[in-house]
Length: 125
Length: 202
Image (cartoon, rainbow over all chains, first blue to last red; front, side, top):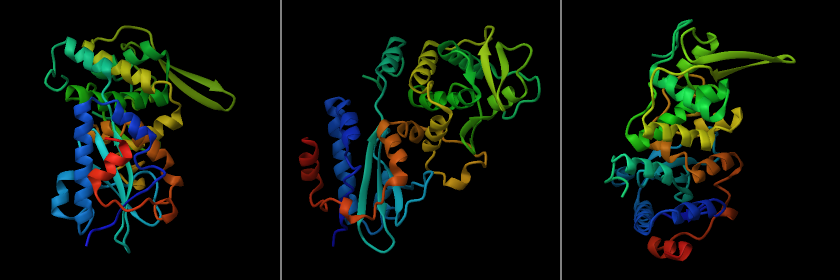
């Protein structure tokens, strides 16, 4: 039976995420969404949100943060170099609550300087 | 490296980074001087694949501190370097600032200079509390007890990814959120592809 994967509405795929996603080029956007769908599919079928071997490609680590979360454990998944998903799971129930997805976009100014100086062209087309 | 001896000069690259920050922002408070070089190295590692300064960035009680800069300021600076370290006394409080009064020995490359400028533009005006919180948020793999233990802070892709607006906004809201509150839960996701198309219009 699938594990329930549940969006936490106040923060999951919120306005900030949509803005960050829209700042990416079309191909990058598609890639991010494809990776996101793949992670959610994996989470649905996992036995444990951190320990399953097939989840290790997402390099899950415990999000300890600077504050304690009542009633659950936070875990951070790495989708791309700069995209992260944080979810919450519980000791006494199966639900995985999707808390936030974030993307750090690159600075145009920096990309321009790197391009002008002939470096990292393959990284910054 | 790490703590500097009294009168010891900062390393050439760290000196050049601090000098550029002073050029962009004017005299730096101690908090800015000890925290902004860390952000410079986080951004530099993403774009250049290496940090610029050779500073030792550590998890202090109020965020990440570059140890060499802290001890340099505490020592009152040095005779040969390009900085003045000035102590102000306001009422019962005292504060220290570092300002540029000369030319550093080393120069930054155009890419390095752009990175320092990005950090100055994006984070240079944050107050002490916000800078402390920001640097802690880049190190969410540590639990609370690690702050004040002077461990090495992350200067890697994780730290860069956590600079995102969404990650910072989430970290700031975290203490007010209750993920076990089912009233805030949406419907379980059945088909992730269909869900994302519906939610994001992709």
